[in-house]
Length: 276
Image 1 (cartoon, rainbow, N blue to C red):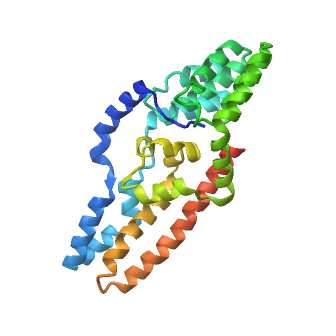
Image 2 (image 1 turned 60 degrees about the vertical axis):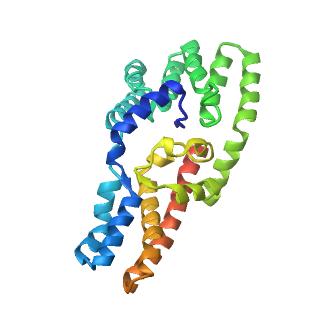
Image 3 (image 1 turned 30 degrees about the vertical axis):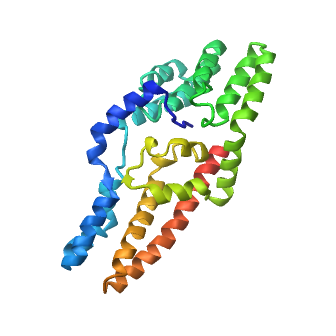
């Protein structure tokens, strides 16, 4: 349930990592240049390659990003389910601050402490989650964890403050997620579709947009695949309209429509999961 909006330290760590990976990202602008040339040269082999989504997915939508952290948090969750909280906490502690999964690890570690009746330690984790740089974009479960922990130590004044903070800081976000769970679309998604140029998407591509979208939506593979198809279609159609490739143009028109609907449906699903 992470929404990563980093502090200066996290920004520096992630920026260094992203700079090292930047050359590996799939660029729509580069694809456009290659596709334009293939059309101009009537290079059918290259055209077929550049419109083959099995190939494009392999270039733009890697099946695993931040694989080590993803593996560790999966293992930690399995241990959590088995009530092996100490071992789970050890794994949560191994998730680095540069990982998109870091805040998820913090929250889940807090619940592990809570289930061990270590309420002060659980509250220490919620202080991180509810710090100014995260409070507007995390989900409501962090507030719930803090309230329950405060209840267990009889901090009734703290419970009231947590409730006030939830209403003040999360009102807009809650409304956005509820809307997305019903419609699958908002102005932020439209902006993301319009502005995305590189794949796989990364959190620094979105900035304040993270406040208005489901947590880690940009890491979801189905979201990435459908967004890629929409963007490729949007990029290809103006080029194809200048050529005699009518069948290919029709295929991209159909792809644009179907993938837009699938993208919207996936956002509805992600928002519904978060709302629950």
